[in-house]
Length: 283
Image (tube, rainbow, N blue to C red; front, side, top):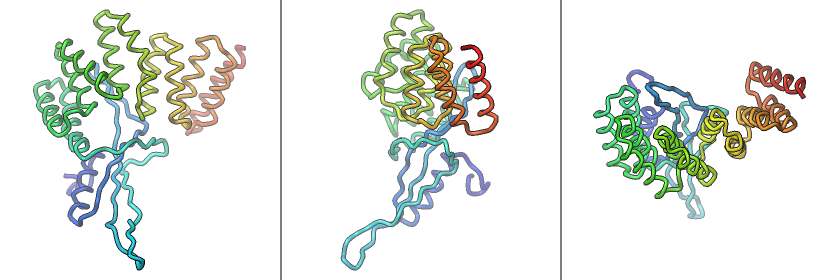
């Protein structure tokens, strides 16, 4: 479809690239790209877009001294962005399972639960311990009313992996939805121990903490975003508004100035500067 229609999404184009590369015997590797996500909320489910880069390597050759070398690889990114944060290598089985996982996410949004389950089962056959697939399966269980199975999956991932911001965030939401606020708070304390290379996930949970008026936690999470991606103006804006809520005017002004300096568009720069002026007038 991608070749005949000259169009496609990131995954279909990456699959097509691999097929062409394999025909001529070229090595292919995938890397996760954490770029500015497109948020979509339908039927109380938020999806965040992400994509992969395809790294195509030329075959090894011999020079006159009989030593081997590789030609420089070619990096193919169908949706490049200056705001991208390159993540880790994506294993082939995880890449292949993404096809079924993406279809399952769409079926879940459409509340076609049986179809979503069959697609997730296909994804898990390829990559049984893929955290994002297990997270989506847990969301499916919760949406279909089986909170016990959803909770068991969240706990399994948190106990048998380095953790996941998405899994922990969803589990905290489940605990709060079922009135277990003390447990939810204890799990929130685990955020800082998780290793996740996607700054936008940290930014998302930071905003969630801010909306819940948990300003100390929000500040730590916004700082986590900044430490990972110091070029993102919105993370400094998040720190600024949180410092303001905590009564620290000096730090709020400093963070807002940094947000204005890093703004990507004149419109954003004016917005941050106008907020900075309000802070200056207030203190």
